[in-house]
Image (cartoon, rainbow, N blue to C red):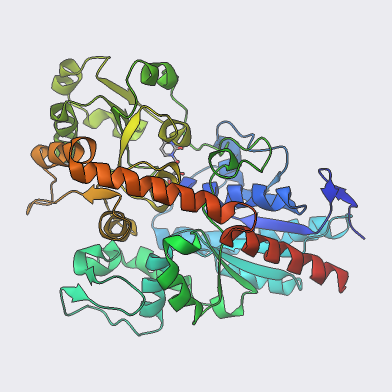
Length: 464
Ligand code: UDP
């Protein structure tokens, strides 16, 4: 027995989605929840109690349900290490996710399937304990996932002895294009282990979902699908920017940072179309004070107006000298923004980004060329794709001392904003935008995969 109708559509089953509790992992899973709900599934996003109690603007959508699990740190106490955090997340998460499944068991909408972030392989054990379906959700690019997959299976051996890495299915990669955990061997062993653990039980999952779209990474999707059959379901960004078929889906709606009160929209409107550089390093990356200073002056010297997201924790790195040198007309510094709203503004000519996967796929979906300044984890690989494979941006060159100098920053901004090469990038970006829309529109590759996923869940419900 189930609900006959879920939000005006025939009820097809109940899916609980469990994101890794970080902004860059919550956003895609949240959007995927909305997509599933728009197709008649009941979708419950299980966020941690800490995220639930601290997030701002907690109204993602009337179409999905929010519930909580625990990572054992409901009051936000810092863990000593990522390893100890993950171990507590696993034990408390398994227990509280089990309780959540039990809670729904006696209702008219028991859970049919758990969709879990690939960083949380233990969630599949919970699904199996209750005889539920389990779908792993990869929220990084397929290229990056495949690299980790090869390392996990011992096919790509570390340390890599050559500067150029040639792997069937992937573009040829220099060592610096590899995820940071690989090219700076031993740099973050606990994070690296977490990346490899994504593959512990992937072969046991009922589906392997991935937040990319087929045409964006066709070759590697086909190659990796020979190991695990992949279902591309992206881009998972609000429907209003893509196919516009999901009702009232205009922003993510679950921010872990305070939105800035500055009026970004009216500031943008004082500038002409395609004239503003939008600068954002996502939710986690931190720059050294020296690097922040170089970035600040590089942006300043480029001569283009810029909107720069400087999170509260980074603010003290901005020098007084720089603050005095910029005018309100030329520069707006904010602590957090509705990034998609900004990227969709016709005033933006370039996205200066750390190349987190969400930011990258958001820029592609909005047709905005980029300056890529990767910091760590998957970002160098995304930057490589941006510059050389999709040809929608330039990547900064890092000096021998590890700092990207102001002249380089100025040069890269000018390259995207002023050069003939920049014009080609803008044309390419528009092409990727059209293909992103196509993927999630009716009969698109991602749409077909999502329909297939939904109908298999319905089939399973009917069979019991
Ligand atoms: N973001 C935002 N406002 C900002 C900066 C970032 O809403 O001012 C969002 C952005 O749209 C993206 C996410 O935060 O969805 C960051 O994810 P990404 O994978 O790009 O980077 P991470 O934060 O994981 O390093």
